[in-house]
Image (tube, rainbow, N blue to C red; front, side, top):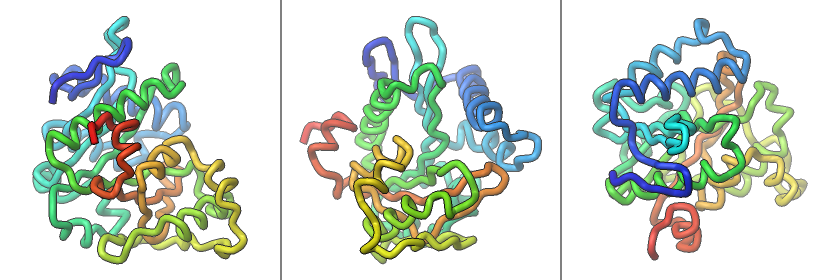
Amino acid sequence: MTPLHIGNLEVRLAKTDAEVEEVQKLVDHVFFIEEGIDPESVVQRKYDIEVLNPNSDILIAVDKLTGKIIATYRFMRRCHADKVGGFYTKDEFDLTKILNYDGEIMEFSRAVTHKDYRDGTAIMAMWRGIGAYLNLHNIKLMFGVPSLHGTDVSMFKDELSYLYHFHLAREEILCRSKEYTNMNLVPKDQIDEKEAFSKLPPLFKGYLRLNTVIGDGAFVDHDFDTTDVQIIVETEKVDPRYLKHFLGWDV
């Protein structure tokens, strides 16, 4: 993948063990220090380290003024998942229908941005990198599991119900949570779409603008104190306007 230069940021894949270690420190800081979670109590941290390299591709944004990695995304294609016994999110969602999808698929995870770079510039630069990666590998479907922070689903009843009623995946690619938590908490006719959308974290809003669809049921992760929702994007179904705006594709 050819590096992209966007303002003071360089977006590219991590190339060295030292960069992978720096990425892990950034991930640890955001997931464990900022969120106040004890990393020693989270078995997934071991899995994080095992799958980072060479069993995934790691997209990074480097501040060229400081040389520091300030944002990252982790990508796993079929060839990566086969080396580690499956995709990262297989323990939370039944991925059978996605695995049977005709075409290259990619799981993305560990979307992390340093707190000093959360004004939107870094994430837009990372989206351009995602677009370049999708194009390079002819990715037809990408999926991941972003989180709402907290495990009391009643706190998110409007958001979860909105996602369920208005963005549920079609049956052919619909995946179900393995520890099923119902997202249909508010009747469809009682949902204010604009208000529910406004309550979602910025990352969710960005995904939804790409015509993202949602898996069936949330997964409550008590280790990380999150409520996880599966999202699925079929690249051929994304509005061409957003392909150009978010991913930088000429359409």
